[in-house]
Length: 207
Image 1: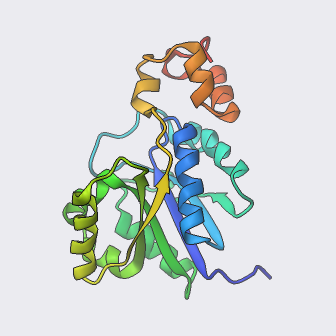
Image 2: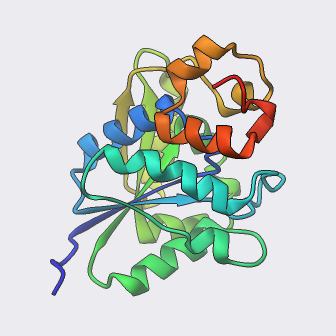
């Protein structure tokens, strides 16, 4: 019988592709929460932007890089297997039903906190999970903490995980803006292997 789960952390994103910044953020969030289980969940079709051009199966395969972070980390394909757009409130509802009694934690980037009240059923999200904000060390201002206080006033639970900033973004990788040396510095070995085998982003020969 598996051990009961007291704290369950959801770490989601498009991960197109995942890079060392994502790994650093996950470590910071885990340090802040000390979860019993972590689910890394590649997004299906996010409601706030176009669907990724990279197939979900390949993004999931690249996410194997997260397994090296900690033995508590697992991958979930739940969102990429769902039809239609993926809403966070639905994902959290599924986790609430699948792990009854577990305290849910939702990792999100600091920029997402400012638009949080535009998310579908955002008050239900606050009721379901504690928000764990990936804050940039030395890079976030008082307005971020004011946004957190506003959500706390609505009954939400918000904590901060401070991660060292990594000057990298998935969009810069996809665009080919980074040279081979820089790519090798920001892409984990598992990700580079998938990119080479499938020539993703036209970078197969550069990584």
